[in-house]
Image 1 (cartoon, rainbow, N blue to C red):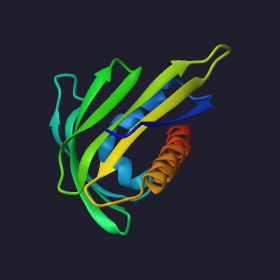
Image 2: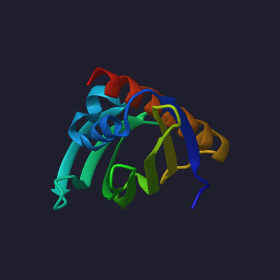
Image 3: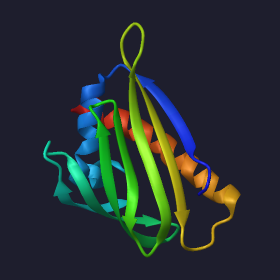
Image 4: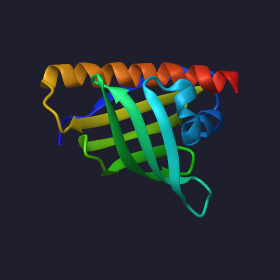
Length: 145
């Protein structure tokens, strides 16, 4: 599996508000670049998404995949690929950490390996762009809630 890409942002928004935005998967098309559609296929006993189908535009093509979700309270949201014809592997997570003096640090980790050839350097650049953009968009969205 390829090496993971990580990005971090610190904001004045509490972890619970950030977590609520992250787990509201059907609203991703409203704030996550490229995401066209999300369908939560299964929820866990806690009411949180357990399995979700995504459709997005990336690398000039439409990509579909299904992710399984795991949670550690509101401190961590992790996902991994269940099925896709377009992606060999996809793993990621958001982690939320309290910051001394108030606020939250959010770390986003992502590893993607598409089924179509993408040079390693380009893949890493795209992952870095995705993680940084996602963090900025998450903070903006949570700040509007």
